[in-house]
Length: 588
Image (tube, rainbow, N blue to C red; front, side, top):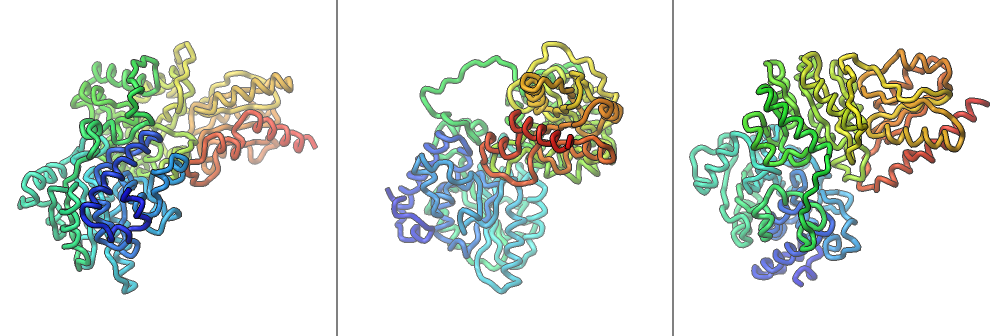
């Protein structure tokens, strides 16, 4: 294999052009095999193999800094920068993260997993180079889909007037995760159709020098283009047209499905089976379709991640004008929904927990300060074994401490649908609902709770001595703890489903003082600033002992969830052990 000769980017420079082309085929085969085995980003990486080889052939990383946007396309880069074992050796498939990571290599400048950041980061790196009188090219590698994010515009605006070396490579494959959305893409289309010669040019209008390459998967032409702009003394956009999923026919045909894939997607034995089992995704889309059919003011909104919330292409087509994909623009999504709600529409925004972090100011100012009655569905909110860039454990502290918003956390299907319908129909509050994470749980009976009676907890089982308050996903863990306390210690603990993350039921908490010694809170997220601390604060001036269980304030990176549960004492056995220790101290 040609790859046997490649351990650093410098080794590339010893290859001739034909060897480079053979190398691209080897890398493509490695990525396909590895991602098929482990899951991961398939299409984005296959589309940039040739451009990544050309970048490292022409430039001199790490002196020349290549800064990837969102890292969905960093696998070829990792293979060429000393981490090929993570792709050649199945035993080491999980050794490296799927995103750029400076702790892995000096060739990774930033840890990046959210989109539209590369130009801003690169502009800062370029300015630092200039302040320190250093040399080197600064290259931001950004996809066309990422250009829909607000930070990309801010970065481009600043980068255009830097006045020194700044190279922005726009990898244009005419796709985001799903189809591109927004007016910018009309101009990109025009530029592709005119081979970059159209007078109307977004990048030139900002002040960039500009060049276009139609054959963005051609190594020879990529090298020729990069050699021309290497060491340039002013900002330039290099616009290259590529094919997402290049070299894998299935990925080229179905670009959305092959953006990120599950393991075994290409296995002949893997058959698409008809699975009619309900999920939280399916009951959500069924609800929205039925609601939209009956009410023309209902509209579903996604910030470019429709598949993650079950918003299939069929679902989107059925909704028609009652669906908006705003692009990778979470901040805009919040303000857009606020505008919709203030003017009589009923927006339902689906967003992942990890991406809510990008919207703090808009939730606070554009949404909650204006008290706009939107419905925000927060998906994947939970402790997990995800990469550090995609953790879903921070949404509770972020959302629940902003005034005016109501944040709900259902424990089963019936509660979820009841909360969803209440939220869509009410007009007094912005409402967020933490969509249950995991397999669907059904209570088997309708939920008739009036959720307009804010912050009233549900007392599921009345007991004595110990009260267990299990929030959302962890209500079922609280049930387990209650069962074991009864079976092993003959303790009849009180069980409470709080429903609300944003407030506390003071009357119920006060009543627990009469015949309880200990209140235990369980939440599937970070403890600092979270739900449990609200309970602890309430009891702070009393004799009630409180134990809060949840995650620590830390960035975890692909730590198995079982290991995290042990670390955080989130198993019934460990929780009961802590309860016993607390009561022993309390009794003493």
